[in-house]
Length: 251
Image (cartoon, rainbow, N blue to C red; front, side, top):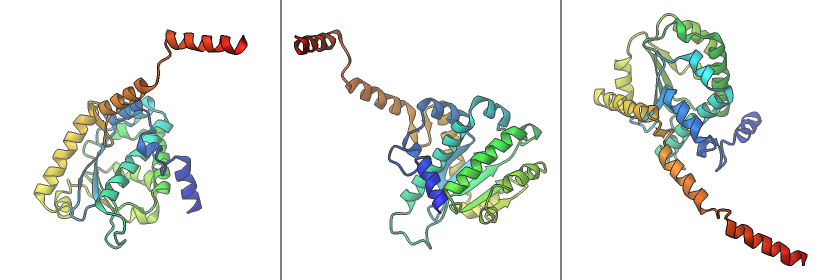
């Protein structure tokens, strides 16, 4: 517990100015959001936020070449903080722990091939995931891996090494599209279709660099611009006033 709290303090996860409140640069948000494969795009009937990852076409090697491990870590932690914010909205303070449920995560591996199994990239992602598991302990509600090809079991053996046993126990791995299971979890075919449509909207907005992790980036840029404009600019008139003041002090 002490180690977890120290880690959360180090990464400012519980601070009003922390990474979950915009501590990451807009540039990194925009660039990472355009290629990040996960989206918060719905809720279960019980209120749990649902995240959908499309991993089959993720270019692990290219991702590692474009972003540092620190940038990837910060984005991943911010992504998890977004999920916690959605949980807090769904489950008001004072909600019984018996009714509180963690997020549901769907991992679609359709299209996964050997090119995704880039060992340096997988090891870096494993370190990032391990940090996330240590800072957000025992929070996962359920993970459903769908369209899992045979080669996935190679990557799974690596990821399992950094995940707690109770987290592994909440993971279901399926070789099919998992639609029957997902419909049962989400409350029917219409609910699943709505979630997938929401995912596509979130993905389009993120790839366009408009809306990432629940933040309208253009609006955030405008807010920062307004804040900078409110600061008094250093003009020739103000510099002249400073020189007059200095001459009076030295007279």
